[in-house]
Amino acid sequence: MPVALALAETEPPRPPGVAAPNVAPPPQLPLWPLAAMFGLVPLWWLTGGFYLGWPLLGALLFTLLATRGRVPLPPAAAIFLLFLAIVVVSATRLQSPVSVLTFALRLAFYLTALVVAVYVYAVARERPDQAAVLVPLCAFWFGLVALGWLSVLAPRLALTTPVEMLLPGGVARAPFINDMVHLTTAEYSARSLNPIYRPAAPYAYTNTYGSAYAMTLPCVVAYTMLRRRGPLRWALLGSLPLSLVPAFLTLNRAMFLSLGVGLAVLGVRAAVRGNARLVASIVGVVVIGGLAALVIPITELIGNRVGSSDTNSDRFSLYVEVLRRVGDSPWLGYGAPLDVDTVAADAPIGTQGQLWMVLFSHGVPALLCFLAWFVAAALICAQATSAAGQWLSVVPVVCLVQIPFYGMANQNLALAFFAVSFAMALTERERLAPSARPSPRPVMPA
Image (cartoon, rainbow, N blue to C red; front, side, top):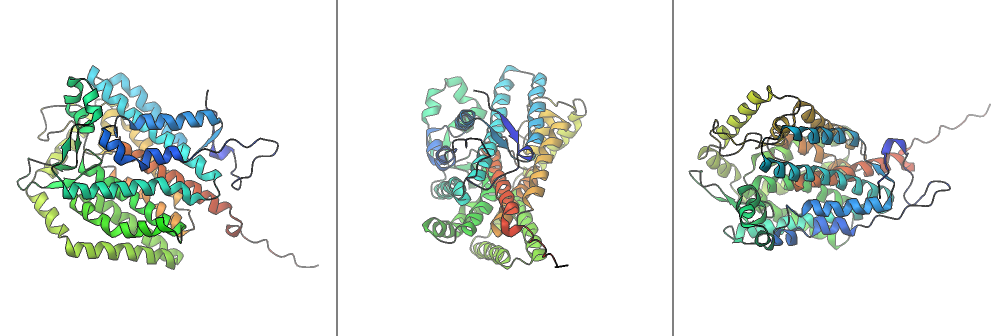
């Protein structure tokens, strides 16, 4: 059944539960698919299906949207649709049959992120209790913290997963696929002069863990501000200090940078608006992080890692090679990253950052569209009036800081789109709330 999608701007939102005149209300979208997708991540990780099965979970959401029929698109979705169109056309630049498979998987992650955004936006607009829509992200957070601690306590754990056993041997042994289906808890860089195990589960790479942590933390704080009581709120508050140990031990500089920039932007907004509750929440998060830094010598650990590895020079050589080659194919790129022998890094050109992947693989126009979507999202979400909405508005800012350093052609793009689309729906409802509208001026008697 085709899906009749309508841009949000073409259909002014109505209060939750109120249908259009003379139109039967559409069936309400369930929350359980989001709970299964984000809340059962530890299970998907144990089976080895966290990566390859993620687009299938997105297909489930799309099926429910198709069954329902008419659904609104989040604001600025047209920008991301244009990005997807350019990505599809860039497939004409692929240079090997193997790259077609990796291209298809990355495209599936992009499409899944958009489907998640549409689903969450529709659910959040129609439900009176919007906080309930954030529960799947809270469940994802608990899984992230629990698996992070597993990485700390059992860093050498490695298991063959059911999905790995089901794949043909040649496919399962391919490095790109093996990283996704073979279960490990931590990442270990043998090239470092002082190698350590850094938490990564449920992801294949510790940088992806740090990226997800920085995206999810504002959502957790937002939920605690939407819900003033209840066991879930207190469990989340208790998990915040516990989460810092695995997060800090990732030694992810871009994670700290993106959270720092996000908190700085949030602090400026809170000061300008005089929002004491928002200021108090920022101070609370900073104090918890500062106390953790007194126990975990994070500055020393990061300094030792940078000083004993070639991580900076490797990244720089890849970035220089991307800029050198993109001039030969600026409009559509090369379709996918390429393995070459002209750089010192043990990684393909077009990796080590979403900015460089999009630029090299899909060209300059695709990169502009990708960045434009996050900029538009940041501007839209910044209009939030509540403390919770302001915390959620940090997510696109965090993503913009991470784009040059972390890849997002994975589950984390859907994670970001979940948070952003919910923030858009929340901001929309705040704007339309009676208390947000200016009171009519009294009419003076003649």
